[in-house]
Length: 295
Image (tube, rainbow, N blue to C red; front, top):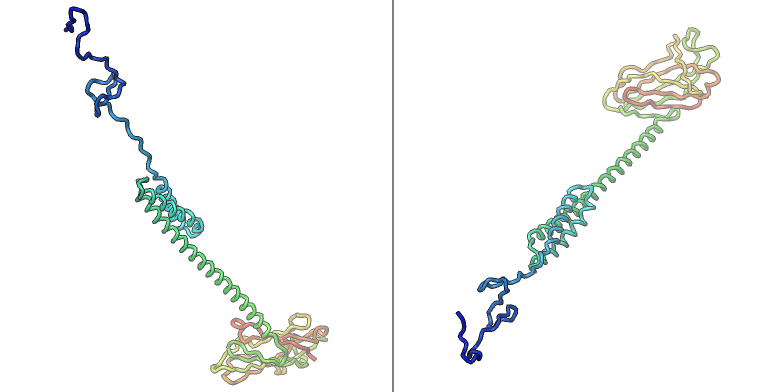
């Protein structure tokens, strides 16, 4: 259809359509401009709003550090390493919890878990430290006590050893209650039928007195002494038929005593000093020693 034109060729009266400008602002409020390629009557979708990412790093870090602190704290030898990650877990968890309250993070539960694990890790570290200190102190005290006991045992053994070395005429009481005294040796002249005495040697007689200081009878298991000369060599026991020797045997009644007499032959160059060893029961009691000159 064509628009009629007046006969005189003038422009028709009334508003004429204008060329549409797609980039011009809308003529009425609320109108949405259309692009040339946009279908007529379809509004253009608005541009999407840019949103920031949640700040969940602190919560995740707190949870990991809390787990590390707890695991390290369970090992006694590693407790000194557990307190630092546990403390950092509390700090980072608190920061992550603050972010969650302000809407900047979405892992509030993770941050809380990190804080709780951090506190637990700190408690475990403190408990492990106390336990270690107590254990080390116990070991040190036990070691010192053992060393002290060993020293006291050595001192006691040394004192006992010293107490068992006496001079002739001094008494020594054994653990079974037998008090023993060895008198100073006296010269002894063997008869012509003596055994164990070489010509030129010097013979001496040793007298041993045993007194029962206990309340029960006690058997003398070994009533024979040993004699060493001045050179430390064992002297030979002299046996003759004179009947002057007497060996202590059998039981000694409470309050009673038994006397033994023994003769020994000494080489002339080592007869100036002797040592006598005696024990009523060598299986139970160590020998006591009496020493001194023979003159």
